[in-house]
Structures are given as C-alpha cells and as structure tokens.
Amino acid sequence: MNLQVSGDKEALNVQIDVIKSKRKTFSLQAVSSEHFILRVPNRTTKKDISDVIERNREWIEKHALRKRQREIEEESIRTISEAELRELAESAAKVFKRKVEEYAPIVGVDYGRITIRNQRTRWGSCSSKGNLNLNVALMRAPVEVLDYVVVHELCHRLHMDHSTEFWKEVERVLPDYRASKKWLKENGSRLMKEIHG
Image 1 (spheres, one colour):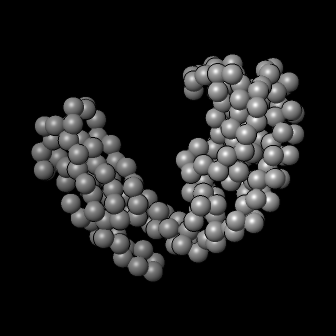
Image 2 (image 1 turned 180 degrees about the vertical axis):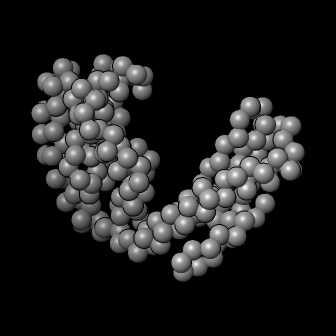
Image 3 (image 1 turned 45 degrees about the vertical axis):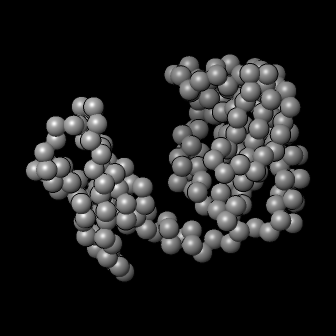
C-alpha cells in the first residue's frame, strides 16, 4: 500500500508493507523514510487496514519526514580515516579504563579485561567472566553517553539481563541515564556511519 507524504521541500512516496500473523494487536514500524511495516492480526480485512493507516496518517507523516531528515544528514557525514580510527582507539583504551575504574566501585563489582572494539551493531557487552567490550565509536559521543554505556555494562555484572532490577541499578548510579539512552537511539546510526562509512 502506498501513501503520499508532503514535506517542506519534497514529497515522499511511502510504501507500507502489511504483514499478517497470529497477533492480537496492530503495530506500525518506520524502516526508512519511504518504507513502513504494518503488522496486523490474520483476520484483518482490507478496509480495517485502510482505516488503521488513515487513523495513523499523522504519525506516519511525522516519522517519514523525521527519517528523511536524518537520512539527508547522514548522507553528508564524513567517515574518519584509518589513521584517525587508530588514534581514536588509543584514546579509547585510556578513557574507558579510567571510566571503568571510576564506576566499578560505585556499582560494587569487579571486572576482567577491557577490550576496545570496532563493532557495527553493539555499543558494549559484558561476559559472564566480567570481560568488557566497548565500542570505539562512543568516543564521538558526549561524555555522559560514554558513562552510561560503561555503567550499563558494569551493571550486567549484577544482572545478566535487562530486568527491572537491572535498570534500577543503572538508575541508582546514573539517575538521568534515560537522556543518554535516548541520545544513542537518536544519534547512534550517525556515530556508526562516521566510523564505518
């Protein structure tokens, strides 16, 4: 199904793919500025689908235009050179070590090895042995975001999941962690593009 979306500078032709499955609710997902997915229960009629799209037209338009703006911004991002990446990784090794040393006693945990990685999908990880992997791309983020990822991974030494208890622990150490989590969600793809192109 197609939907025309008009912005200040351009019109977008949004393709909405409908996926039927054994679910009870409707779900809309913005994949890109011109591609959305609408998940619906198996027995949903064409009229129901049209009604859902019409009811959510404003939401679709807002997210399509927002995604388009982000796509335009990302097209102009310069990928850093190999030499810059090496320098960044060297700095990251020192900065992350300092941050982990600072926050581990506050969280109340010990840790193993700290490794700087150049990953495309993960900001960090913590193994059952307490080895921490942290993404070099975080060096291009605000310092409070870097703090958030370090604390997040250290809290996995207490809870190897994302349970309520885990998030309570993160909040105890960083009461305003949600702002950093939001920043990463909104700007993470730009950071990755700067590193990986």
